[in-house]
Amino acid sequence: MSIKPLIGLFVILAATYGCALTSNSELAGSWYLEGDVNKRTEIMDTASGLEARNENGVTSRLEVNRSGTIRALDWGDLRGDYNNDRIQWSNGSAWVRDSRTSSVSDRRFEGTWYLNGDGSKRTAIVAAAGGLEAHNETGGTSRLEVDRSGSVRALDWGLRGDLRNDQIQWSNGSVWTRASR
Figure 1 (cartoon, rainbow, N blue to C red):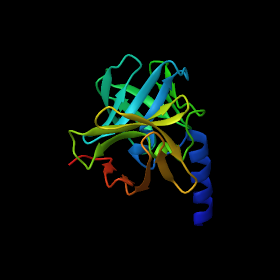
Figure 2: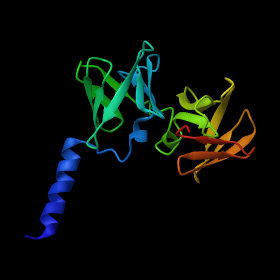
Figure 3: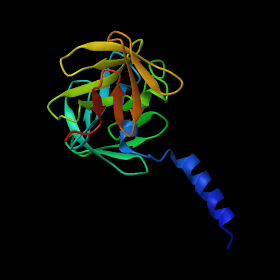
Figure 4: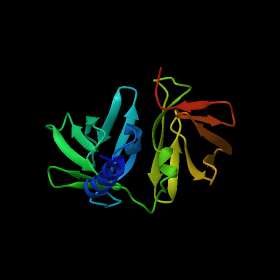
């Protein structure tokens, strides 16, 4: 049997049954209940794994398999299916990314970060009405701008950063990491 028909079958199945995740951090960032920008939800990539926060501020640990099936362990084992920037939950609700607030390349920056890898110095990058917004470890915020090369500028802080290996290296010498030590 030739491998070409098998590859063709895989492509058809992948297109039919949704998107496989390449990493859990792909889910990190801002989501919106039923696409309503006034009902923001969030998935954070924390040191202990993925964590979701619903529109009411209630959190749950998440388990995700590579096919995009999600289990919210602390919400009665609620299940969701990820496909094309949408999570369809088994309770009938859906979380949708707001395509007006961020592009695919911007989403690489969204989620939880830690200043110099210190678990007690949590930072975050979230989708906001005008684009991305950074929150530093002291509660300060800055609008962000991502250029075509993948560099990010914190407009209100006058800083430039480069994303490399799950770290943002800022022009002031600080580093934001995805995982804490």
